[in-house]
Image (cartoon, rainbow, N blue to C red; front, side, top):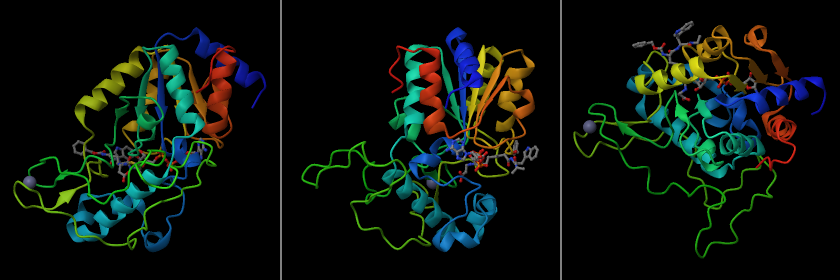
Length: 285
Ligand code: BV8
Ligand code: ZN
């Protein structure tokens, strides 16, 4: 990607001191993690994610919902951070005041070099009891994240692996309903540590996100359709308070109108180019 938009976005990033990077599912698309817009595969294709990701669905069929999250957890474990994730880490390395806010429940920001993103919708890797909220252990047979050297295992997959080409070393259990474990404390079913539709966002995360957006001098929104609320309001908070908003998305979204620059392309290509445009000497990660 080149052109005047990229140059302008690079100028805005180079001038920023307190940027916010706000990400959605598109950030992880090139790592092979399906977005919410992408059709589901296998058993899950007949379910609407927005229906499965609800307390009602878990009450009605805990094994179906737990199985879905287990399948997503394994998918993320097989995935690798893409050059977009590493570019976000490069921005934070260059500007330590950078706040990364994500709607994603995968751990690719952390594995891509951003230690503590603000998680608005929770994580696939923080199960807890559905009754007493006691944290629960991850399933013992969960494979380690791709790229993690496994002693004695065939050569661990290296970064050169084509992005999005998930390769699993462990045979995958049947992809389907799975009875959730019981809480070690009260015996109730364990649930995924994510925010379901109809549930309130964690107030600490939401407050931190609003505060960062209100105080930023640039907001970079990456790979979100901006249809899910209240998360979709975060870029609007920044724009209302005068910060320029730069969007990275291959297609237009409801945020187009508030953006100073719209960069139409995939995050894994655009973000490294943006870092190079801002800091020609920088290693984009
Ligand atoms: C709540 C965790 C109340 C679970 C998720 C106001 C207006 C309208 C509706 C509402 C409203 N306020 C509340 C609602 C209801 C609802 C909502 O927003 N509904 C929408 C659908 C209309 N919100 C809620 O229910 C929220 N809770 O309101 O509670 C309350 C308050 C107090 C007390 C009690 C209750 C909770 C919402 C959170 C739900 N949980 N995730 C899980 O993951 O399983 S949301 C989930 O979906 C994601 O986290 C994410 O937020 C969203 C998906 O959006 P995106 O990430 O943007 O992804 P999407 O697939 O849509 O788009 C991908 C984009 O990437 C596309 O634009 C594509 O072009 C682009 N792209 C593709 N490839 C690339 C790319 N971009 C760059 N590079 C690429 N390579
Ligand atoms: Zn419990």
